[in-house]
Length: 385
Image 1 (tube, rainbow, N blue to C red):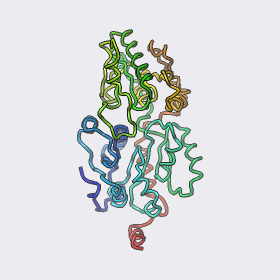
Image 2 (image 1 turned 135 degrees about the horizontal axis):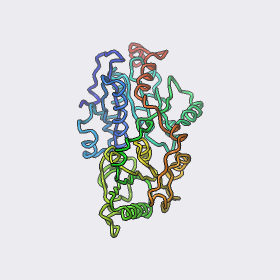
Image 3 (image 1 turned 135 degrees about the vertical axis):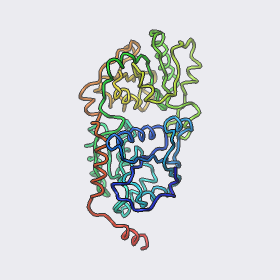
Image 4 (image 1 turned 120 degrees about the horizontal axis):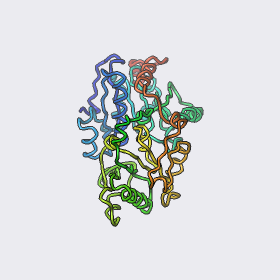
């Protein structure tokens, strides 16, 4: 691992440079790992590096060791690190699911934005975007933007029509967590017996609502003593104190206070991939985990009629995004594990083709050939002036 201030300055041909993926918390690291897989499936010889944005870190040591045991390739410690990366000619692309303020500041510099040989900055969404107007604005100066669901492409263009500083930019549809689902093999599906409730940090927002979900999971566990029911934690209670999403009522404490908890209802802090490997059903409220469950070909239930749901600001956006999915499930159907298949037209708008890595690299190549670029000499002259 190297520090952001120790970037290489040797001029490597653009198309031979590695791709840098940024992360600073569990969500952005999940994205980076899946994006790395997409890119390396497209080009097994491609070098992909993982860049840890230390200045905004919200990862615990346990999470880093669990998700990225080999550690990051480069650490970006301060606000100047992104300017150094933009000028060092070390990477052909910087790919991120979060447009960090320090990176956004560099992209707003028109001269730097037009500089030749700098890396192409491609921004994805963090997942399901419940407040897309802000998400689009944060990506206004990125070279490439990948959006989901598909109608977001037109919405982005409509919002961008009011931007006077828009330079070279391309849009595309997709996300590494939104790849077209592959149904599991019949024998694999038969072996998947466990039931997972995928918890989210902010929602449900009240203690009563969270107890509602725990009591529902306990009822399912009692009705199905032959199945294991798991509360899949987003993080442990003492973790992620610097995270953007702070949890007020943690499930371990609530479960301890619940009487007569069945033995087959337990907590887990396993990874999403580990959970999906043996999940027979996936249940969530307002989490992007719903997309992960569908992508894995696992029956999915989105429950939004929990206690105090009218107090939860994420319920209405989730209801809108999943309105045509066929996955929003009543309490009665959830308790009886009556899941429906996702609607085909909703799948088409939400999930992208599996050539995502190829499309990312093709966008980077077009970026390198874009017209009107300022040379390093011209940039040096501008800085001296």
